[in-house]
Length: 279
Image 1: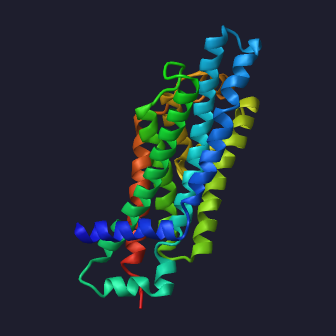
Image 2: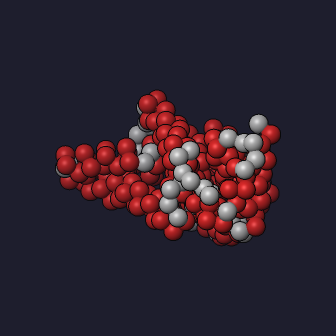
Image 3: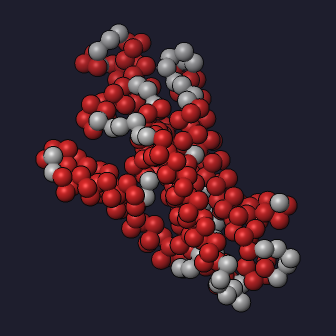
């Protein structure tokens, strides 16, 4: 266990050395723009209904909703960048050959790297979510409507975990550039299925498009994860999105599939890495 934690700490330090953490600054800038413009903007316009306090509450809900999407996007990008450099890049540099010369099993090395990767993504989400909640509470008052939604926060942590695990699996046999490309390809497939195809299928009631959308849910569980998070969120933004897209809550199997998917990709990386020559 000590070896695993040591490798995890090395992975986190590697992320800091590579300045992957600069993505946090991008997230904070995006959150600041939303937090200081959306709530007062909605409060000023009576077309949103209700009195001033209610409009401000809706504005804060919208700020938290879109702020969460900024966090999820950039934390996933950071996890992808970090995951792509975990195996092949270190094999090429000779780092792994040095580590494996010590009395340590390959699965421990991989588990340590995965744990460091996940810990980094979790810390990014926790930090940014807490800062966003604190800024909204201090700026508009602790009773104005900002909520610290723990169940939704826990689901958010799965986003960088999912994408980091996928990219690390590719890096077990491919270089950094190819690992990034493979992750981008499967993300594009689910984005098209979840966004464009789903919308067209709803408008046209086309069975073939609905089948294609269903296929995208198996390629990567991004849509299942989004539905799970959406079911835990409350406020004006979720009401609007629900009215437009009719987002389902998701079944127990949908939620279990996310964990099965992550475990399967980790097993895949272990399968490849355990048979790879690192000399």
